[in-house]
Image 1 (tube, rainbow, N blue to C red):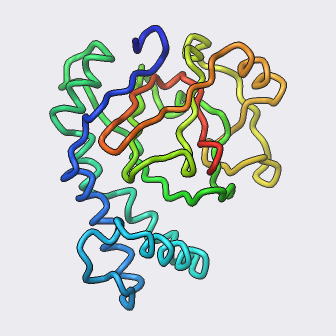
Image 2: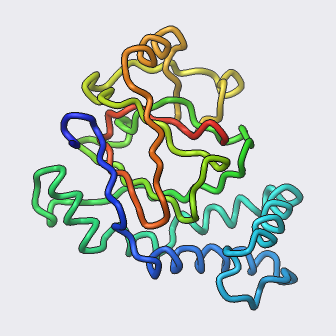
Image 3: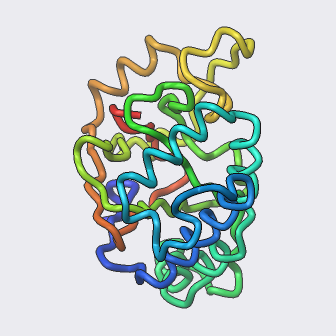
Length: 223
């Protein structure tokens, strides 16, 4: 359970309509900056592998413009609507043992990773630095998941460590990106990897994982 392991996977807790709204918003932002896209007038272009290839090439050739598309996606009303849905808030309030009216949400994020691209890989980290009270993280795939893409990695029961010490480095000395703000020292991390069970959250479209802000987690092997 959640209290014992630090996380819980909930199957089929998201409907396709909510997911499609987010992806539609993302595509609208993309087509704004790439009006000549061959997929501009296609329905649900994200279902085509050719669209993903075009999207990836645009990112590679236009990194600064792509960063603007990325920033727009993070503030989507569609994301807030999903997080604030009756089903999600009911699950969150139950896990946190509080009333739904006491919930708030902070720092929504849509990751746009391509397999084997290490640029934005996040190190093992906690989300505790973002909270000033007990918090819960909601993580869900927006596309069909499989091994080649990779799954979110979790250290089961590592939430029992509480808030742990971080190693704050200079920007140029981070082993991975600065996405997770700071990294756990390698020697300390090595002991945690031996002590706790590594779990790959094998989620399918519509599934989600809820985990405590103290739980150690990382990008997939293939990101």
